[in-house]
Each structure stands twice: as structure tokens, then as C-alpha cells.
Length: 158
Image 1 (cartoon, rainbow, N blue to C red):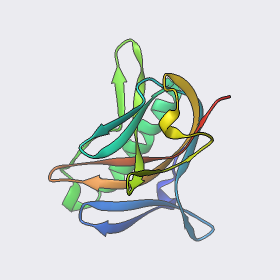
Image 2 (image 1 turned 135 degrees about the vertical axis):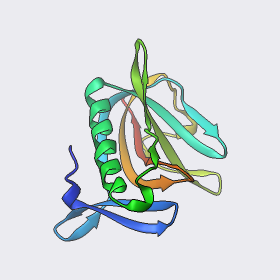
Image 3 (image 1 turned 90 degrees about the horizontal axis):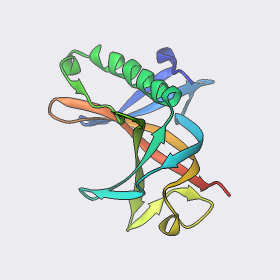
């Protein structure tokens, strides 16, 4: 899936966040990417009150996300306000290992907002999963920006 920038819609939430949508039949839709049989090496990680899960991705999937990020960054740089911002990728290349993609799990009242075929608290990580990732929004801070990937669904392969 390569995003067509002409069908991409950015909706300003505030100065630090723009929501990402694709336009289909004149309607806004979330941008969802499904990935099957993906390995989770580390499990759930908490960092500054945010819950993340990293997944190992193939070179093909890594390049897909890097292309999406490059296209979105090109779109951002067209705005004079953001032209000097540094883009922070959620794809981390690693020597001798597959690349990682960092995804976030939304939470409310200490409960995860995610679809799953089992209890996420009891999942065995270091296993393979089928997942759905939403390209949720573009975040900005003082001089950098990036895409927030939300993990919408995770299913154990049984």
C-alpha cells in the first residue's frame, strides 16, 4: 500500500498534532495497514506513561513504512512553518537483525483500547502475531515531528 498524497487529508487537532486520514469516495477514513505473521521480540513496554510494543518487520514492510514516512514528511515540509523540522522515524534499522516498528497502544483508565483474540496481559511475547496498525497522526514538538502508529488489533496465531 503506497499512499497517494492527493488522497491524504490532514486535520489540525492543535499546533502539536494533525490527524491523518485517507479520502475514499469523498469520505475520511483511517489509514489501516494489516500485517500478518509478525514477530514481537520484547512485549509491552511502558515509557513516560505511554505503552508501546515493537515488532520486527521484514525489509519489504520496513521500506513500505519508510516510503509512507518520506511522503508525509514531504507534505509537511511544504508548510513554511515546518520546513526545518527534523523527522523522527518509528522504524529503527538494526545491524544483523530485522528492523523494528514502534507502535503505541491507546489506554483509558488503565485499560488498553485494542482488539484482540486473547487477553493482552497474558499474551506470550516472543511469538508471531497478526496485527492492524493505524497511521493515526503527525506529532510535532519544538523542532521535530513524526507519525504516531496506533496498534488497533493484535491476534495470536493459533
